[in-house]
Amino acid sequence: MSIKRFITLAIISISMLLLMLSVNIYQSREIQQEIIKKEQSQFNSLQLARELLQSSDDLTRMARAYAATGDSNYKDYFNRILAIRDGKIPRPFIDSSTYWHLEGIGIISNTYTGETISLLDLMHREGLTAEESSLIQEAKLNSDKLASIEQQAFKIIDDSVNKNIVPNQSDLNLAQTLLWGKEYIEEKAKIMQPIRQFIETLKERTQKELDSTQNKLSRNLQQEFIIFMLLLLNSAAIIAYTWRFVLRPIQHLTQGTEAIANGDYATRCTVTGSNEISSLSIFFNQMALSIEKVIL
Image 1 (cartoon, helix red, strand yellow):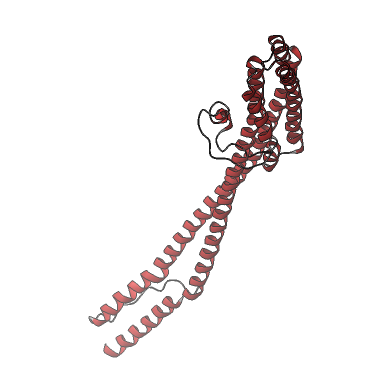
Image 2: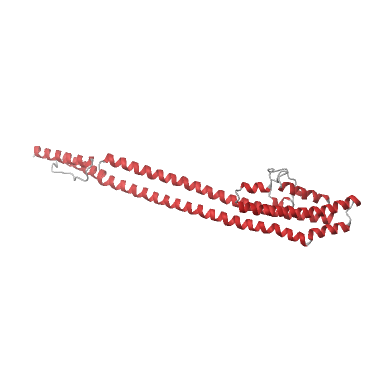
């Protein structure tokens, strides 16, 4: 093989392998980004499901506090929680699990407000399946139904306040009975059941997706390793060829030329391969023979 052809083939093979390696590296990076997005989506969905649960607990806490004290501030907090959840007023900027223990009730000032969007719309952004969406909507409807019981208790207290300025104790007791009764507890459980199913379904679905994507990434990394090894083998073959058929023959030619210059006209070069260097070696040997015949 001629050196020119060898160099051309070597450049083409290395270029193709480098191109394949670059494509695989790019694909691996894209897959890694996909894994990050799926994990983030799973985390966000779980956080929003827990927020729905947290909002239900906050509503219960505010309703019971209003029934126990008759303090209208708790009713205001209750209505604000519903309005935030339904996307009627901006969401709190900070974590919802602490909001109604600190900022929401004025213990710490909160000047940051987030997006005005309902909790369900936020969850749908995360790409829920039809089953997951159905479960979370069921939990939301059950929470709204529970809120209607809480609002019945509010009406009892409000009517009592309208009559007596301060709520009557018997009315407070009646409101508390609604908020601690069997029906209330059962309705509360109906919120928890679909949320639990939603979390289990979401985890199962996203884990399958993550496993599939991880396997895809593993296959890509294996391909990268194979291409890298082919690059090494290709490089080793180029080095071996260059040494055997280019560098070593040139070294012999150099030594032969020096020998003839020093009067050793019997010097001959070993002919290796069938490329331009081997042709040059043949011509060198012919030249050395001619010189030898002339001189001797």
